[in-house]
Length: 85
Image 1: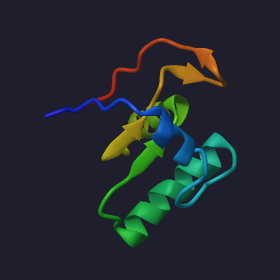
Image 2: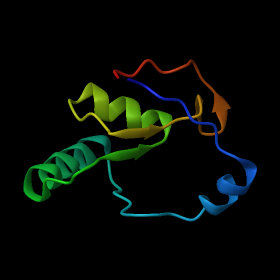
Image 3: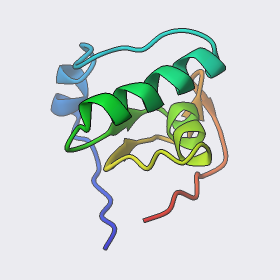
Image 4: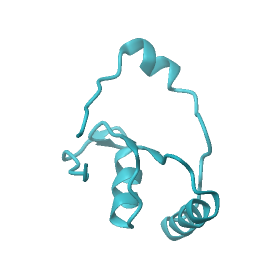
């Protein structure tokens, strides 16, 4: 079952600060690192933030438990993502 939540303005302000681990690098570097981390650490949940990140993870076989998207890339409106539920 899929759920859609809408961020309140107050929560949006709180979530401006980074939480968790930021993985930086090229697409190939970050994909390889994420897959390696998942295999090694076996996290209970994967959370992706951003339309491009979420789309790339799903396209590479990594299904986030929570994907935070807003139909924007680099602050420009994009097409709605179709992610598996």
